Length: 373
Picture 1 (cartoon, rainbow, N blue to C red):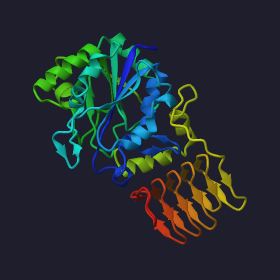
Picture 2 (picture 1 turned 180 degrees about the horizontal axis):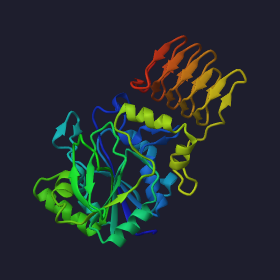
Picture 3 (picture 1 turned 90 degrees about the vertical axis):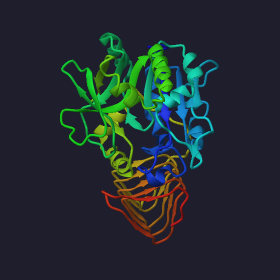
Picture 4 (picture 1 turned 135 degrees about the vertical axis):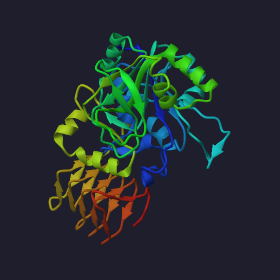
């Protein structure tokens, strides 16, 4: 498999759904599962499939993502030739609110067409960056070659999602016959996971043809308009997959990881998830403290009570404090006698003494990065 596939990950500005979590960053760099970022999962899946060249098309507030990815060495992608490439896909004209408006994957690809021409591999994998998945992409590629399809689209029979996503109707052979968006009646459909395999040659042809007609959406201009012209084959993945498009999805999918069976599925030993390293001391739990059914990263100090929660690196919970059903990101401080329930606290949040913050499982309270409450 090594050297046969080239990866392109789309990481762009999205409005609204993740609210405070994306005030200072793109969805791709939203922290997840105690020590990771959302992009780590699809990027690691590509690396585990033997990909040595991956381009990340970036747009929007991407400084946090740049800091996280760096040279790509934590994913073994720091190379003299190829490796990890960051692709600013948009020029500075037609700016809306300080950020160039993102209109679609095809426009992003057209903005880096010279990069596409230089791809050394015959086939390309396109993927979004906000997908929690650990998928053997080499199996998808082998199925793509065996089927003789022009495009292979990864999808799942689990159609539940809080966000507006793409759906497929398949025939008895698994070929995509219809691409639908939005869709209320989802019976008999499959939800797209926004992972596509196709040849470099076809990709270049699609970019040129669609952009000459000012068509920017891969879903509309390719999946919908060319369903009869192209052989679009499905690859059904019914393992764990979660598209993080809202605060509620982020909260629910995070706390699912407290289930050991789901953790084993997301983090199998044979396909590790890589991330940027940070060398912290071991977590300290005071003998009088309580830590029950939690996912706790390195460098934490727990002197109070923490239950059914996820603590990122460097979190401190003081004596008398109670934390239940919460997600506390890196270097958050919960002071004495504070009470937090169903709260998402972004990085560097300080909760003062005796403060009480209460959300609900259906509508968790979200505290923006660096806040003092």
